[in-house]
Length: 126
Ligand SMILES: [Zn+2]
Image 1 (cartoon, rainbow, N blue to C red):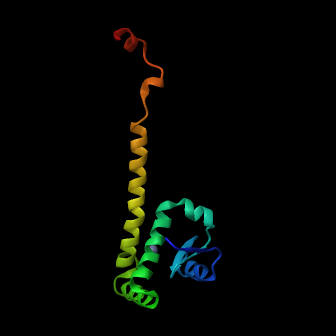
Image 2: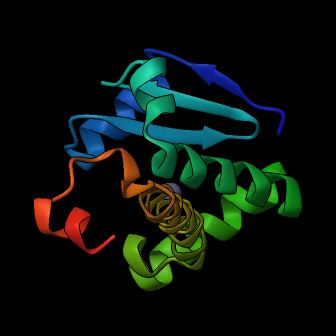
Image 3: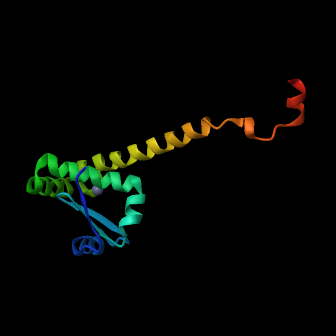
C-alpha cells in the first residue's frame, strides 16, 4: 500500500489535544500523521498500523473530501466508537492480532520436544 508517515504533525498534535490523548495517529488521504509517537514505535504496533492503513483504504474508496464528510457525519450521528469507519478499522487491526496469535500458536506446536531433557522413566520404556 502506498502511504506516507508524517512525524510530529501539527494536525495530529491538535487531534491529540482535543482527544486528550498521549499519542495520536490520524490519516489524511495517504498520509499517516503522528503526534506523541515516533515512526518506529508506531510501525512496530502492527494492529495500530493496520488500523490506520484501513483508513487510507477508506479515503481511496470514498474520495478525499467525501470521506472526510462521511466520517464527520458518522461521528456526529453515532459518536467515535460506533462510527462505522472506526468499527471497520478496528476490525482490520484486530484481524492482524488474531493472525499474529495464530502464528505464535503454530510456531509453538512445531517445536519438537526431542531436544528437551526427558524424564528417566520415558527412556526405560523405549
Ligand atoms: Zn481509526
